[in-house]
Length: 327
Image 1 (cartoon, rainbow, N blue to C red):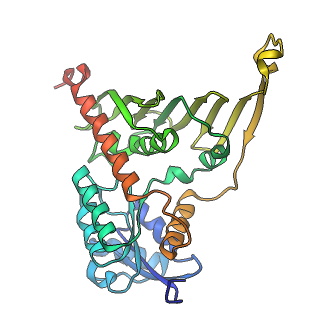
Image 2 (cartoon, helix red, strand yellow):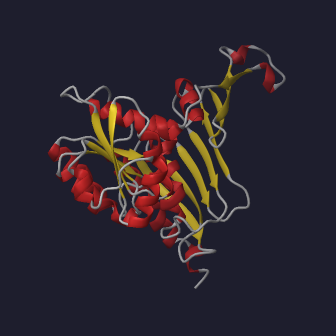
Image 3 (cartoon, helix red, strand yellow):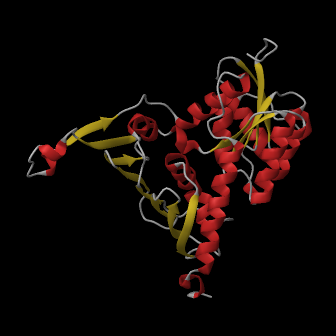
């Protein structure tokens, strides 16, 4: 319920592949009034409205007149303009990642949300991944992180480099897990099937000494999302695609065990968290933040920080020797 005691009125702007699922989940959530959708493609809007038995509004303004909160899943280049229109009306906003297509655009959204005093959340959905949730209680000063996010080629998302399309998920995760300033970024990448970089690797050094090695590809034969974390107390192996994980924890006082094998000093912890659709958890967290029941999980500032790091990686790719290897 809202502060006035009535259900929060929620709508969805942009009903492509991802926006469709926003609408699918929101229309069934308790405690809200689903106000419908808007998509600038009238045929797509009509199709989704029919499938989900909801209302397709004829304009963005028509939807905004009927909502207290919206989720936005339009193409990235339109994020800043649509987001400013939403926030300017004092409407709470969940913006799909990346927050914007430029750092100044992202910072403008953060400022506008602050000026209007409204909730701005960014759709970095991996924060709600089952494996990440299960690992959280055991995390303690990660020192080295290895992340591989590999996907088969598909046209969606190829209007930007793989860094903004896929790697930004992991850049946000790394920033959240390490919680230290970025000291240095080195990266390489190449375009293969598009005019933008399709595979990239980044080495990120943090002020506290932690290092993250991040690889993203959209030209792989198989889909892989793996995260490995090393910290003083042990080692995590997380499968983000499956939502599963293992934690190999050093036993207390292991130095005095006179062990001859690794198995004698390491305790195996199978990581488990309640099974749930990450997008549903994300939307539920947004609605709780709108109601004032909890803090925003992925703030606008966090989204802007991840975007800024993505552009640092992109700049490092352009400065690398590989960048001039292909015309």
